[in-house]
Length: 215
Image (cartoon, rainbow, N blue to C red; front, side, top):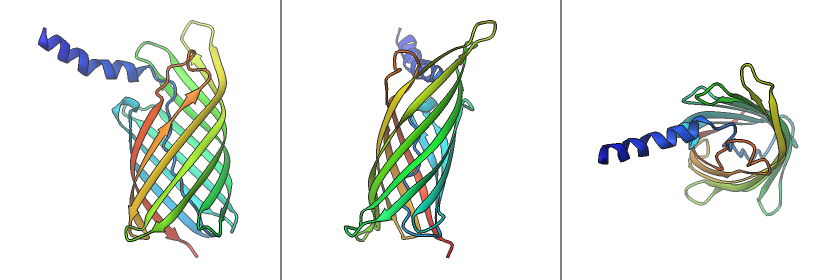
């Protein structure tokens, strides 16, 4: 009996994660300060299938405009990609604000024969501070909102879909030197189509962040 309980405990999270169509993505909150700023972020996140690898590259094109690309892949080869363009500004209070708009796409499946494609059009507001105190602490918050569309594809069946609004708040902190820091990020997902798709509401990520000036 004890062996059966142990087996269930080990198998249940895998079974639950195997049917996920969408989960929060730990996209870096870069807090770009000026033209030529390059942020490279790479790390690991959970709970998607216990572990997923992710990476973000953000760049200050001008003194007000930045671009960002992101990608992640988990242990089952489910992936998500995202691209965005945004506005940034450093305020007199030393807070940095960013406003991005973009598009994301992802692919997933369950261990039956159903596949999921998700499409996300979004806007995201970031605010935070960089290089605070002896730890060179960066910290901040983000609110992402948009329209999530999910395709369900099953062989020999008519495809179906679900769509609706989503909100994804997140918080992060990172510390280290001015050029390289270790960071942690926490994301939560709320969507109006929760009853129509399989999803996980929380993601926690750990990453290494590189701050490079190309000017």
